[in-house]
Image (cartoon, rainbow, N blue to C red; front, top):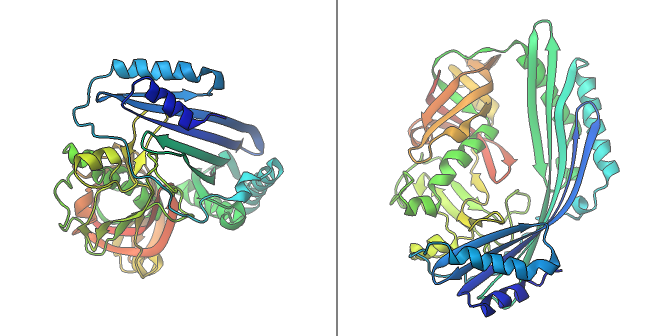
Length: 443
């Protein structure tokens, strides 16, 4: 196995100012399926990321399928890349604060030891449950994945190596129903740390199948302004696409956020509280330290609508004369960037069913696509509605599809916020409740 400390020492002996080395050991099991399991991927990989600094010149080298006998060659490549890179006049130093946050539950022995037979059995159970719910239903696409990750990190300011392990499962299924009246489809997923505790096969299959049947006769969403119920999964997608970039210290420093110089100001409705919490084991995105070796933490972002903090890695913390919040993320071939670990929006006290009773005319948006085309610099939010329901006089009525919803996030989550439901959902790196917003344009 590669000794990361030896790699750092070799780099320093070649005259680099600072060096860091990060190694990923990944095992990914993925079974795809339609009407039966039909493809198995079981892949073990070792990847290496090297970042070095020579007189404020920064070079990054990422290596997949690492070979032990080519370490000196990798070092030569990293140094060559760095020498031809432009200087960064803002460079201070690599992260100097390292360690671990104790996070029970972030790694599951169950998932490490799961068998192919167990995975195949679960998939067959899902397919059979879908068929039992509706004989016309067909699984168009599905996959069950198990990801086991071990990350090790060290740099010039450390005398040892810090290592963390986390794993998770994800299961996705798309169901389609073809009838003489039309075609309906619906997809959903579940993520978690334990298949035994967090996957209810019957409920998962039943929900997808019933929704696919309901959308066989879906009608086009009419243009207008509505009170919109955003399903928790849609709320999570908006938070990730529009709000998260706005609280990144990189975008704050570079003036690419509407929240520049807004700490202490009321930026959202007073009902909204948001934290970034990378310390809860059941949340996918939690980890014992970030991708620079800095311990993760719980950071209050919005408290009663007031902006309290941005999210930092060590680079932007140094530039902005503060400390890292443990939010560095990276790929093997890039420098770290600040981003959220797990955004958590506080839920409300009433159920969604009770809140819908107070809506006279509205749209309940269940799924969208294209929210990534929103503009986090301005807060402009847009998404294409794929699945929704009409709300009339406090009741959910016919299924709807199509239409583009638009709003400004800071108005929608500000003065136009109606309420927040108590039901929440975990998605990768976000935990969010249903949210109700007035005056949303749909065209």
